Image (tube, rainbow, N blue to C red; front, top):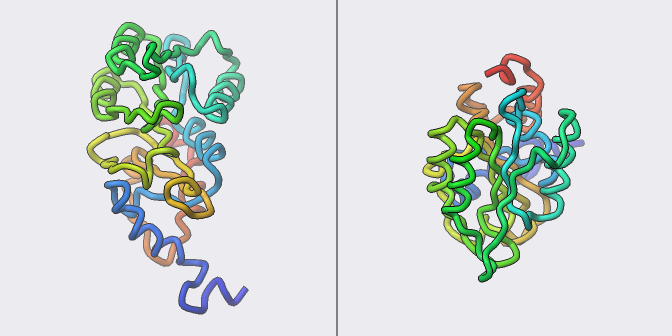
Length: 220
């Protein structure tokens, strides 16, 4: 128990030291980073918060060869809302194994009346393709569609500027290119909605999880 509050790196505030370094990898502020859970759990939390299907807008766009756990999360969320894989719009790679970003944009534009969420990777884990996130983000913003990112194969691998990407949420794990244990989630739109600063002596994991449960935040 004493290790929570004493020593060179008290557990209570150790995340603050980590976030000082992480923001340099991510191109965002410390208050937009939450260190918690696992990648899959964080994807569930993000989708529970941001995927709000209606009768007309309920579809999710995802790559055909998405990482298997991402696909499981999406299928679980669809089932949770009484939907199924018929509500998925998938994008397949071309013969060179790369995803045609213009095809993603075309599918967003042609399905903008029914799309609720676009979930894409920063790097496609089969091919190593770096996705032009900002290019896709602009189309999502123009059509009021939520954009989520899985950066598991991107963070610590290539430069990221999350603020310029303007995604609604992103998650990743830290045991790949960050070469560490534990898992890390990133939150952007939630901070904009809450518009609160977190003090260094506050537990941001507990803070944000409480915010997930606030109905007023969900309504926004």
